[in-house]
Image (cartoon, rainbow, N blue to C red):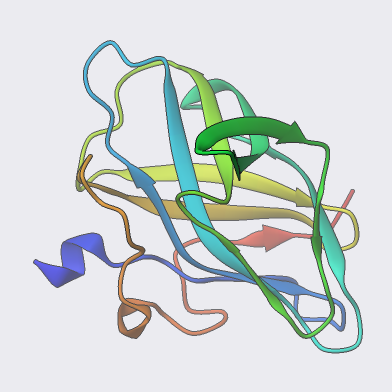
Amino acid sequence: VGLLFAAVTVAAAERPGGVTVANAWARATPGGAKNGTVYMSITAEPGAGDRLVAAKSEAARSVELHLSDHEGGVTRMRRLDALEVPAGQTVELRPGGHHLMLLDLKQPLKATDRLKLTLVFENAGELTVEASIRAISSSRPPSPDHHAGPGSGHSSSSPRQ
């Protein structure tokens, strides 16, 4: 069962300044839902940071980077133009914080399926990520013990063109 929820780790281009994406996952959506959320960990190699500037998926009309803010007991979401990933650090996209919004889903996201995304970084270029889809009630990422190391995932990266 744990393997069904395993996330695929994606290695960026094998060059200085690359990024690695791990534990990519999305919540399943009920029938009729128009939007979905995606979470992951993004790490920039030491020596050079990067910025996530866009994302896209064939599963939705568009994908936006969002941040959930909590003020005075009220949670609000706001769209971000980019997400900084400082050199040698990891940025977590997680429930209640930064996340990717899949807008106008073409069909519901079903638990145990996979979701293909393309992340666009300012320096590393495009990176293809495959996220596991977990139950609607999920609030935590898959165990880090269940991901592959750099270069061994089913996803790929391509340099900016």
